[in-house]
View 1 (spheres, rainbow, N blue to C red):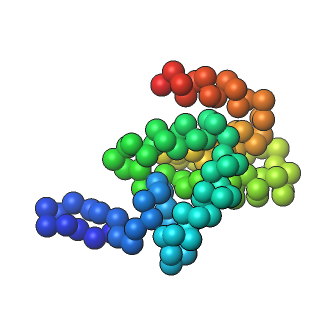
View 2: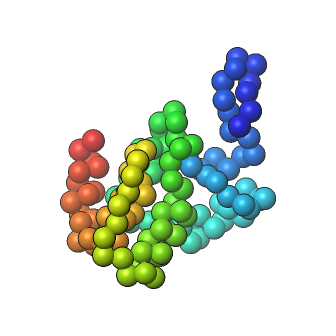
Length: 116
């Protein structure tokens, strides 16, 4: 982060995605990964929450979509039955956990997000 002349914080290094924290040097490569691997697999509730969070002024605190999918993959690998999430921003990672633990919840979550 760097400060502009007015003293406000701004993100340095590009990557316009919310919550982006990547080791990749190339914005184009990261965008390609999102568009070909991450976004097509994003359940509708996650997509809706991601779009809603992108409009928030503090959106850099959010979990990125690739992190959410990585978290879901880890849950699957360890065959998690119980989880605990302490401290959430808009709940993107919590939603990733919930949708993995309760796959039938996707429809009701979409309806809930639509009403926000």
